[in-house]
Image 1 (spheres, rainbow, N blue to C red):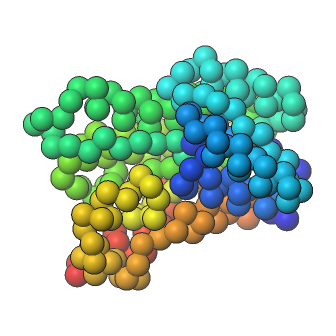
Image 2 (cartoon, rainbow, N blue to C red):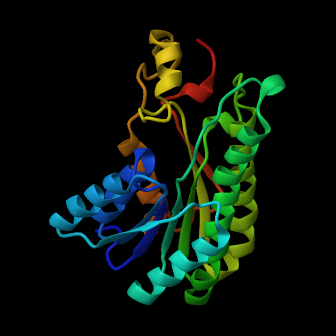
Length: 250
């Protein structure tokens, strides 16, 4: 298997793309820890499902905005499994609204969760990865980072920041054989995107060249690739997985 003997940690792992990443990493042979914020029932069901299938998995409750808690989670993971090979930063939220009337707390919530949360877990993970001289970090961005949409100033700013963080961190860590990449999904069928998908209706599929929205598993498969040795010469890249949406045109 692609990730046999590897240990991975996924933030936002109880739902959506994060949940698909936990499952895909486990099925690729990794021991997988994941962080969830509130939904203990969803986290417990995922642990039970994967454990029943013979995989090694553990969940930690944490708010990714809490830097001290990020350090605690990774220290506990290292105490149990001795190493951390793969970090997937998937935790994210949206608080859409036009900029002129955007609540200050909605700006802060999105930046603090999406961008600072990614920073917090990268910060806690890099030292053990540098020490073992191997690691792969995969950050979840979005096509929104590059292609403007009304009502998403906060979200686009957070994802643009993640892409900048990814490129700079990749350059800093390359000498220690730690790779850092990002995946930028387009419209994916998750609870978080439901409101936008419902609002756009059939028009959304018309502007996607593949004529459909993506599935979380299609993002997870790219994450597994970037985490594995099959991507050993890839770092500092942002891979769009969007059904051709970013090509533009109609």
